[in-house]
Length: 228
Image (cartoon, rainbow, N blue to C red; front, side, top):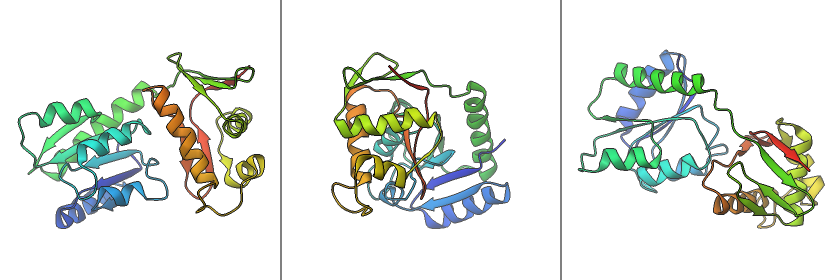
């Protein structure tokens, strides 16, 4: 079974165009990015079910991109690259890639690799351990025991996600609860507030941060979350 959506990050435009066309004929919705920064500024860069990543990219390097993606998503990730440095395989697997294919590679082989990785991920269930909001201490406790100190606004946000029970919380609801304006571009807007909360969690624990955006809708905490 192939994923429903896939981000293809490769600056070889001709190769990316034909590979995207091949995968789309198999029923996959493919979005092509020729620059890693183009993916990162996309409305929902971590919302794809699968990622195909080249290593020699404009913007941030492919290995660094893999590390960044792995902090935000457990989606399947396969590297397809012509880089042949001695330690490249070790580097990409250590960064979080599921598989490495060396160019030139047949499109059919790429599709088979995607199917294999996607099947394994689905069979694992991707069930996350429980996170806990401690109201008395004002901390978020990660599954590994790490404690994240929360500001008053952070705690209000987390209360919204507790109440939502794993469902998406709309941007309007979050803005109303924390008293932010409708201007998404201000430094004190909702996007900036969510970004700071994510960074606080990332600094406290190496675990995947389950706080994700839902394009044009809002945000969701994709892990079991309780409060006490």
